[in-house]
Amino acid sequence: MKKLSIVLVVLLSFTMLFGLTACKNDDSGETPPITYPYTVTFNANGGSAVESKNTDVILYSPTSIKENYILEGWYFDSQKTIPAQFPLSVDSNFTLYAKWKETLESMTKRFRDYMDTVDNRLTKEYVSGNFSYNYEISTIGKFITYMWQQKYTSSTDSSYIETYTYSIHFEFGDFITAEGGVTYNLKNGSNMCTASSKFYSAKMEGNTWLLNLTNTSLNNTTSLDYTVGDIEVKIQGTLLGALNDIRSIGLGTVNFSSYILDYNYSYYPTI
Image 1 (cartoon, rainbow, N blue to C red):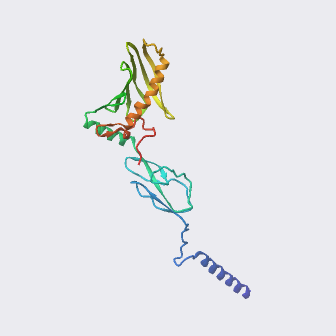
Image 2 (image 1 turned 120 degrees about the vertical axis):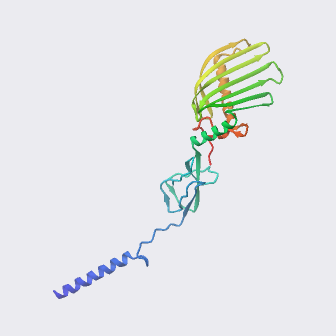
Image 3 (image 1 turned 180 degrees about the horizontal axis):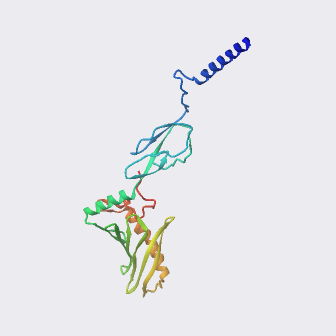
């Protein structure tokens, strides 16, 4: 019996010693953190800081906060052309760059603040070759009216003049429910072709804006034999030019590429 007790004491002592040895991995007695060969750093581009990660995989997109902006995602390059997809495997050292989209509220405020300084109306006109253009942008409350006119005069026959005039009315950031009208006017010597249409919405498909058009009048005395369908094709063809112009022209000190008709369209400003 005495021998059995001695054996039990020895076994118990060995078990306790083995347990202490297994748990004690460093001098502090704490288990050291797992280290990986690669580290990912984050350039928040003006947003709140994001700690570097030493890991082999990043499961979720890191969060960051920037006033008046929405975080669109993280990119491998500073130009933000190569997006990172999560979960993201880490097999080298690299930096991810944050891409931000300004909020609609912030864009609207900046736009209205500027329009207040010019009495809510901006105009511009210029000539390019055989084309002349007139623009007017005005605001009343939260609504914007965009007037656009393109006039073409033939270089070989000055009596041939083709004119498109748009009036587009919409709430800032919402061109999907825009409404307005367009007129087409062709003067060919003593012959005339005039047409008017109204539209109540527009949407983007690929690189083409599609209007819901309703023809209101057509008067054609030319030998070109235009139909309502012919005129609608012409109207659709010039609409994209009218919308692209508002994104690229400078009216006063403002470049309207910063104030996009449809906030969900791909030309919004990003950082």
